[in-house]
Image 1: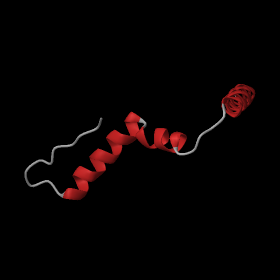
Image 2: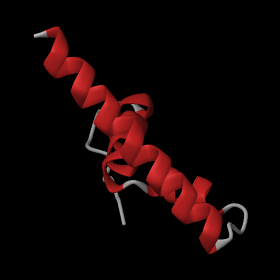
Image 3: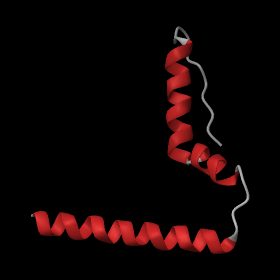
Image 4: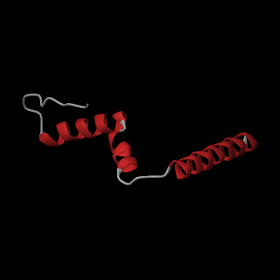
Length: 66
């Protein structure tokens, strides 16, 4: 769980920026978006397969371009 202590004479905006960065690194926002609505296991599998295909095509294009 991200936590930020505000240093003396540190602006609030800077502390907020550090907190947001820690949340992003921890993957909290993406986890919240995933859990917002129920997703059937079959749909999860399909999305996972599509993402793998997309990554493979992207790697292939990168190799062909070099």
